[in-house]
Length: 123
Image 1 (cartoon, rainbow, N blue to C red):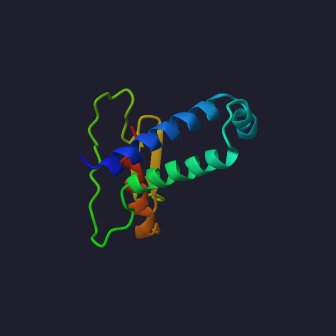
Image 2: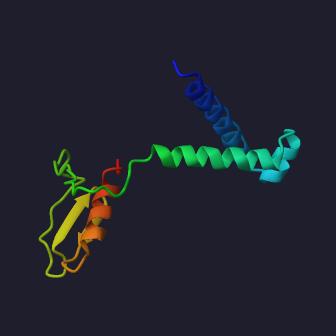
């Protein structure tokens, strides 16, 4: 067991709870900190550290290798999903419930890659 990692995680969890409590209070940060005897400098330090930890936990957006992103195109409920004929202006049309995504022929490969990566997180 690495005590430094455990200590870091414990502190991050504690700071996240404080930040969550402050944000859900409906008060300004200054007012909440004053009422809870928390230094605003400490609060912003904790916020920075929590954000850094969250960013470190995210997967890298750019990799050296090209990857294919799988898309589930199964149609579990035909009432919510429908297939339209692709119009002349769109080369790819994806329907997901009430959302329609159209990708045109002139879309850059980077835009397509980022769009497909974002779709991975759609629930």
